[in-house]
Image 1 (cartoon, helix red, strand yellow):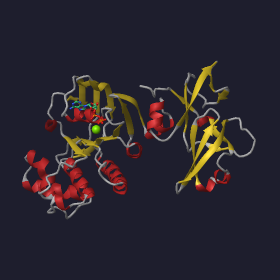
Image 2 (cartoon, protein in one colour):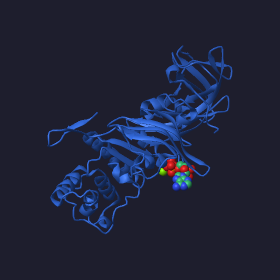
Image 3 (spheres, protein in one colour):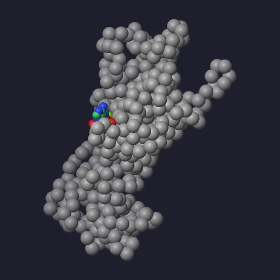
Image 4 (tube, protein in one colour):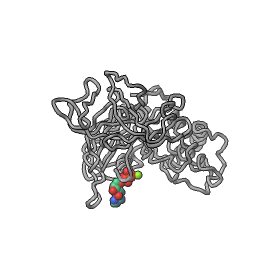
Length: 371
Ligand code: ADP
Ligand code: MG
């Protein structure tokens, strides 16, 4: 656990682990959360990712104490908090709509959680100055919220969430109102701040790129359940199901059957990475950046080859994307960096092509798309 020295010589934790057990929540006939068992390590940056309506906000609100689940347990460290009100849980919170007081000053807004906690005035002023430096708004104490830009409001909301040094920070789509450039900048700053301050952080987002960039681990929710949980690279490179592969990044899928311990696409045996789980019928994931256009007739033993026809090539700046129709009728995307795209650029639409995929990039996943 992350520890920090405090003035009186004791050692105080900067962060706490979170553990939920069998958390269930229904709204009428809607199952918002179903048997959620989630362990978040002390100091971890965990993201809850999923499509709209998958239960992300409900789960965050259960952690915060605004939603009482029908059953289950929520622990912060060793302490069961399920019966505690939000303000008794010691958490920092940040939402998409900043929920700031628009006609009050930056300092008054940030001081609010400290006033509730009855901090003395001089300590409040010092804490406000310190946290404004953390969010890079030093000198903005007297500004009104209504005079700030969207990005600055976001920083004030963050400052207010962390000013009392919570051991747990909960954020629900905090950046989704910002435009792309500012959002990417704030992602970086949030991540840096997390590394400096070290509190356990739970971020809700529906933006897969944001989840992959920011998190130590990502829990993907679907229909109120955790579909898969893991590091960004594990989820991207080793998805367990087609839903996860489709939700994180671009992919095309080929139906494969299994016979005698081997996968087949049509009549073609598919090579997969050594040690991949026992073959069963499923979908072969084709990531656009892992496919190559095979030049020449030579076939290497560690590759799968797919015959197709080039439909079109799109120039996208730093890369090009080719749409290739395979013999089985599937439309597959191939993305290449420009300097290696020559074989795409010289082929006219309608030309036959052969695509190759290394066996280590050939994953067969469970088909869970129709649910
Ligand atoms: P997300 O944040 O992933 O978009 P939510 O947690 O907000 O999803 O919602 C999960 C499901 O629970 C949705 O079907 C939603 O309509 C339903 N739900 C959430 N809050 C309420 C509520 N207060 N009353 C009724 N249904 C709700
Ligand atoms: Mg939500």
